[in-house]
Image (tube, rainbow, N blue to C red; front, side, top):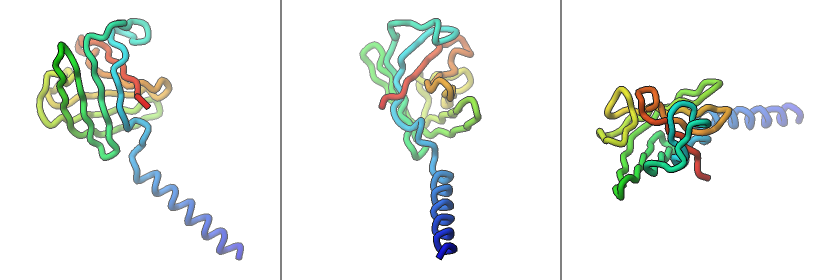
Length: 141
């Protein structure tokens, strides 16, 4: 009887582990909204009035959309993303389906990179590397 009980516990444990390994992390899935703009350290140098409204929505099937509202015009673009996790951060490479002027990239018209500093939990753009503003996003619940 003990062997059957141990076998059941082992099977449940294996099933739980394989479910977690097969599914992408859900911690970043959802809507992230632009909350700060600035240059340098976003915690210190933020602009109180945002120059535009912007959000990313990450889906669990590795698709996303980005929406920007500026000067009364709303632009939405979409694509797919890949994720690389390290101990310190979660990095995203976004691949858009078409070129757009709302893609915040230094190197490409159809790719963009973002990251989450795991200890802070905010999403950051990398546009600041090439003299763009530092963009900070917070996840909406």
